[in-house]
Image (cartoon, rainbow, N blue to C red; front, side, top):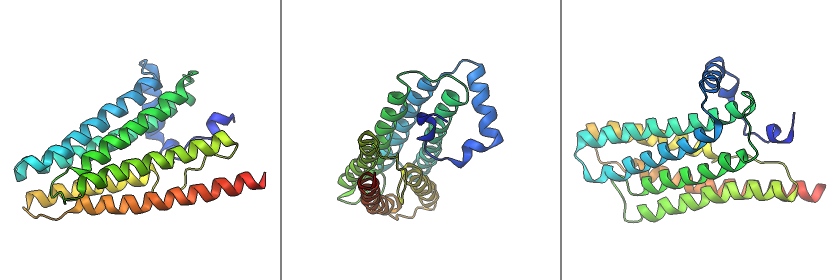
Length: 218
């Protein structure tokens, strides 16, 4: 196993039959991993726009946008799954693949979290909270990359790594859709952003301590 494969984020779905079959099909029809990585930014940007527009619509359409946002967030994660599988298992790795694998993820996180900060039942500090979550998400990824550049392992630990952040956002979107249709005004998205901010801060500290400890023990 080469270093690039060893550093891959552990994802259980990667070992499932359905994921392998879809990745193989994408490879056969000529879809390349870098294109899949770029597509993830499109889906994340669309999710962020849907979230931001929920503040200006009636209950019915607002619920639809929340539901669509949740689906788009999960589609973004599927792109993150299949780009690596097509690259590694499909044998389509490129020399610039690591850039395409990492950089689109950073934009995707910002689009979704900032959009969530402007979503329906926005508290006064909602937009600022969205930006705070985006900065912390970037910092968790930066620390992982910085540690690897310094000679440490790639640390993907949580409690609020990408999968956990997006799982919470998906739950918030689905719950907000249901609340919209019942005309209930609960600030679920804002509360979710608070959890993401706290969890991301803990993730930053946890990764930092692990990286420093590993480097000092070398």
